[in-house]
Image (tube, rainbow, N blue to C red):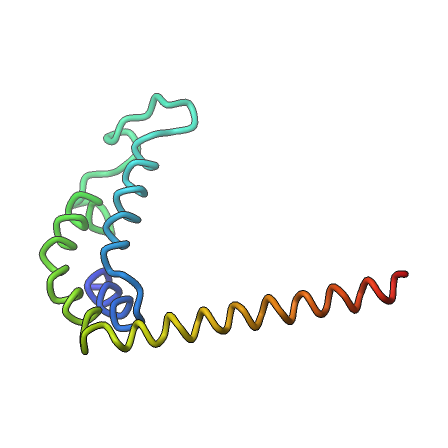
Length: 112
């Protein structure tokens, strides 16, 4: 249930829900490998019925099932909401970079 809710919250917040599947696939890959490279899945992960969370394979399958609804939410109103938010974030990043540059210049003036 948390994965489902998270997927929809991410889509509603204009994060591409398709990224969730890539993140969990990467987590699965990382878990299956160890620092020495000798671990196997069975030595790292308990069986799903003994775990407090679904297996990565189950989660990835669930994402496939839930993705159409999440993408509908993500692309609602022709994607205009998310496009507007991305533009606002782009402007905010530019402003933050300008402010950081001004602070650095001021600090240099005090040092010299």
